Image 1 (cartoon, rainbow, N blue to C red):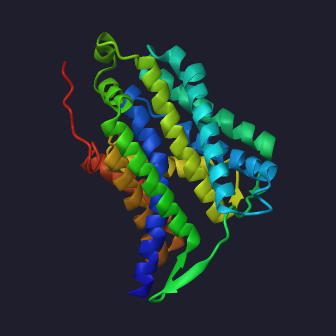
Image 2: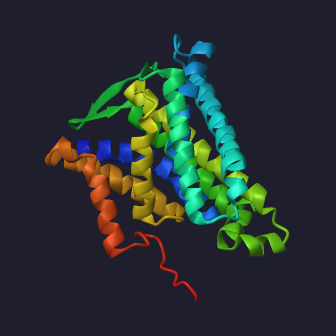
Image 3: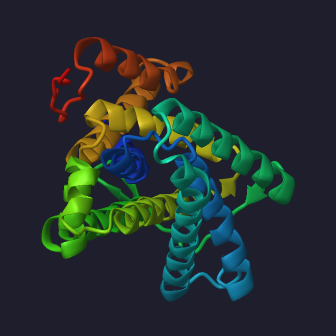
Length: 298
């Protein structure tokens, strides 16, 4: 029983990271019907931005809560700017092109950023502890301070995102553009600005996830965005691409599945389970757990 509780705790911690990254995929898809495969590399760049900000600010040598907050906010801001730049330079000129052209462009941007990261940062970098780390044992289950930070940051960002989407004028505009970009434009909604804001918000969440992972693993690599990016995409599809609650549920389910398979079957199948779930969901429920099938009119 203790082992199961430990696996569940680890699974929810990992799933929370997947959920943050998956939200970027699902929000962009909701507004542009585009799978932004460069999103994983935005996450990767956020980790390196946090590393250099921690070194410059001195937080790397003197871990404190205010310092960690400054580093995380800086990484989130950097990712927001990077996401908006990618949208403006790579995607907007192809807005009226076929989806295939935009998909190929997204893959190209992903490869460009990954190789640029390898050229600039090298193969591997150590990441400092931004916060004093502690561990507690509760009923035989080891609880780490990093897990609590992950849960706290994720919950806070989810609440803020829900408030933005459901309660603000920006959120209403985002939902209108998601329903029909042309109709929203006719109603006076600046669709281009809403798309940029969507990229910015999704990239902010990826930046937060990058810092949380870097703090937990203490190493970052230029190819870290590929693994987490692909798995977060699987989480978004699992929950229903385009659905915000679906992205959260998909991330948590994927994190639990990975951890339980690794703990009770074999760590060899840890990565394979994500793509097995992707195959199953595409075969039996292509719209995802929370998605709705919309018949195409011809």
